[in-house]
Length: 401
Image (cartoon, rainbow, N blue to C red; front, side, top):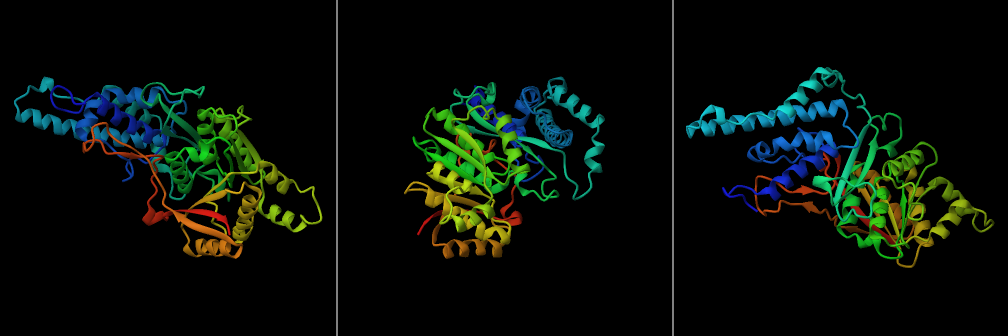
């Protein structure tokens, strides 16, 4: 895997290009400690491919703000790499005409974004919402069953694209962003794909929000080519359900009605229906759960409002009761408020549910040349989440007592 001079070979250079592309498409802040950059020497060797990799093949262009920030950091790193290489070559007596330079296409693109409004980056005030951004997350797998596949670096990778709303919280609608627990839950499922693709699997996701986890499940199920698998994405009526539809449309999943389905599910309404279930049989949510008969219930970042904890837990219990005998719920939570999360666990116990902490699995994308420090490994579904600042993610497996 090494070239004739003992340096990293083509597969390692391709890996370096791939991890940069995956993080760029996920819109990871390029200056954050979470962004995994190859070494300067590797970056210098792959710079000629990056303009094509990052800017010519993307279906969804990054916002001007992100492109400016990314190109600023990339060009700064390339400049440092060029300076290091030139200094070394000078000590070897190499003529300056043979010294490396920064890639002209990348430099020109950086000048263009600066000229077309880089002041907009500086003018964004603290607390203001950034523009709507499309983020795409990739994972390794056979993409032959998908109609829309990427060429080149990510040819054998599946993907899900989400339209992120920077202003989601300011609108009071937390369900329009992909939160960290959703990324971690999806990564956990991909680490053992039979959880979502085994024949007969029927997934019901609560609080689907932007629809990322459900879209990953549906995509994986389509690739499995099993006809008896299904994913239900559920959330509150209105704006959030509309966003789920948008996500399925963006990912060409809206036509796969035999696999994926969107349903409105109001936890408070379900609680009210359960109080009437002895007197009435025309209760739409209860009837839907009975028809869905899930084998696996999923939820991510749904524990945030103390007022909704009991309705959520009652909904989880109702789903488990409606499911098959082996049905379980996997609930991933970013613990931002320990008191709220503690109240959730207490409510689970009060409703007779058993909750066990499960170790989250997270596959990594490693260099073909193991142990090579120039190209670090990249975790699946990367993000800029800092557990010490933003809260750790915990996964619970919940079953009937």
